[in-house]
Length: 181
Image (cartoon, rainbow, N blue to C red; front, side):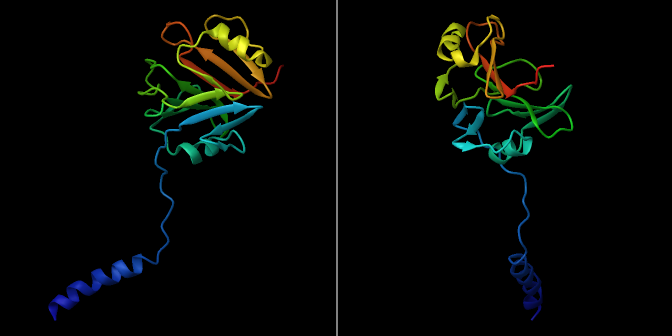
């Protein structure tokens, strides 16, 4: 009889617990296989984002590994080679960085991006020559800067970077083009 009283509360707890809807906990971090920018639209693993809100990115990528509050709020996806920058309090993307090579800043991802980054459907790879990118994407009108060439099309800017001073692309950044003042 005593055993029945001991097991009854445990049984009821399990039974009633199965009828309580599960809350939405943090979404596990997902490293994308592909990121594409085409005609002003951003797609991650084939899912086109409705907008450039931080929430839209997190719905696909999950929770960041680290959040740093500096001049911008930086959401670091350390295992994925990605940083997302938000102007504090806006909830909107200021810039997304896709790292092909490791940088030394505290907020930088610990691992490199392992997926494929495409611009207008054409692959941009680690170490790719800046002049090759300029000629492959004339519609972006990349400037001649040798450290951070930048171009834009359809409201999205794209910035190339060689963070470790090695030749060619080490990081691709993009975000909404700032309105000319």
